[in-house]
Image (cartoon, rainbow over all chains, first blue to last red; front, side, top):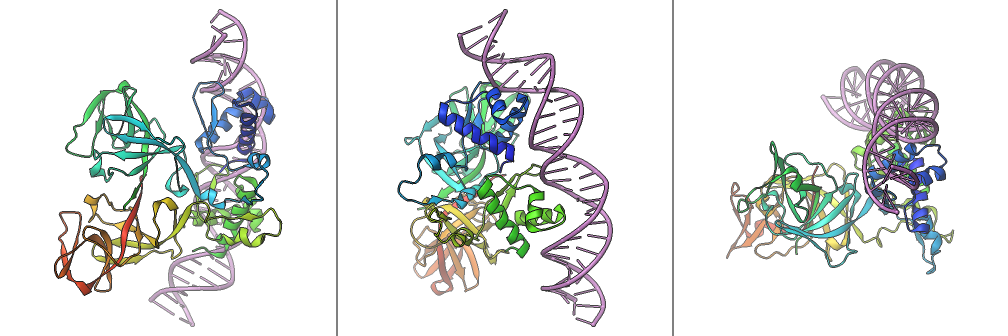
Length: 222
Length: 222
DNA sequence: TGATTTATGTTAACCTTAAAGCAACGCGAA
DNA sequence: TTCGCGTTGCTTTAAGGTTAACATAAATCA
């Protein structure tokens, strides 16, 4: 959850972005909150990011995006419940998180964007730690010995760090995304499958960028 | 379950977070509960965390998140729709289902009842078809080649029927529950593991009763 | 019944963060 | 190269979380 200042800033952000369809600058935020210096805002923004309420591009101006805000006064006000409907006090809201389903992933092929760009997966928030997450559907059997099967849905936590042995979404040469076990050898990076039929592939450090780390798995039998 | 004080604090937490969309500080909790010192709160919070009702970031201010609270009466009762702008704790409409966590299951041992008899797992209702379901935690590696690992949570749909190849919860001789692949040979029932280190076991038809069929799987990586 | 454990309280010291301010620095876009 | 903006380092103060030590009543165990 949030501290009071974080809450205040998040609400300002939401209002500003709703009105202007653009992010405020750090100075505008500073003024709105009533500070004398931007660095305080910087820290609040970092806090919001750490707790998974916003997402941003580093070193980019006005590049803040709200990805979660349970304080829906704005929404509530703008549609004051025409259908007489109850304002749902989503207590369960604190217990579930909506993750975007970004597509499918397999060995050796780019992520294939999912047909429905608004597909979401709602999972119990106890399944994820803090941070930003997304979901992917697994295609193929290259990780079968790690218990990851064709058709499974995996939950990925966004990060650019990985340590040896982590199962990560790695982007190779900027276009090929793959779910593999990560290992850094002295001067190269090894991506290994969990299936003897696939060979370990080696890359230079800057051929590979980490997109996230495996954080959960969901499977349906039918 | 919870102690009375833990219950009281959890309800206060829920109310506070609902109203303020931010966590209370330890001092605010101390005052709400009526203690003279924060350390008591600290202990209660630890208890709530240990029992899985909340989650928190260590050493971070106001960073408590409720992930479960079976006391949903709170909202429903306290505003029994009088104040026209009703607050409903709409668990059902939120497309989630609460499944009871009945315990653990392993090859060759009875289901071990879980310490907290009211443990629930909330899952997106899209994960299950119709029917009654429950959840179990897997112990051991006897089904590892079916991608079911130690520590996974499986979702079981209650049924007494099974066809060859189904993965089922089978109760043997009335006391030993086990998750295995089901096969009916001419006059006997075979329960086979998905791990070459375990042998297939054979039983007479009336030694075995089916308790349910594997319907889903959830895994958390950490 | 006596011993032990568990839940709960309290005080007080201690350590870590949050928050605010100032200023210098760095990066991108025009 | 400038201008608009984000980033960082450093300092100070207050807020907030963590612990150890000690105490008591109730519940449980032996």
